[in-house]
Image (cartoon, rainbow, N blue to C red; front, top):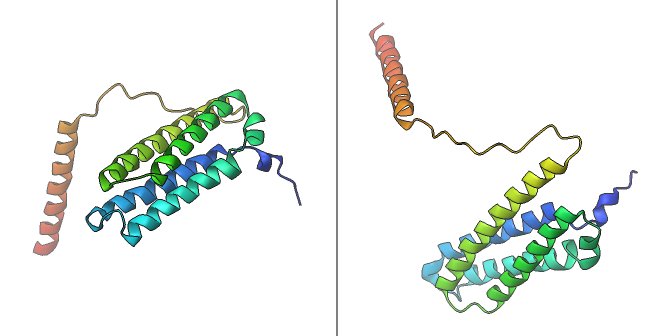
Length: 167
């Protein structure tokens, strides 16, 4: 059996996963806003998010694991650790559904930024990857032309159907 030496490293993909799961759980809890903060569903979703952040902090981003990362990953790991603690503390002291809604939105926004930054940097740093992050799209799509194309395809499809019915 081959030993994977990367297993002991701090895990940024795992961190992205924990934030993704937390964002999903908190968004789900917000769906039950009308049931209130003490609803079993809301409480269970909050508890699940706290569990995700505990695992991130205590397993994936320990000081010893962060220390051995390359500098660019270390910076992201430390940011993720800081945001995780902040999120966990907010969830442990939450007082209202409005506060939960704000926390859910902030968590999802951070998750997306962390994922984009980690993926982009990973591709830039990979010596064997031929993949590069896409450049920012400067030209806006022509929605008017798209609309015409869709309308034309719809007309062609209707003409085919009519032709099939008539034969």
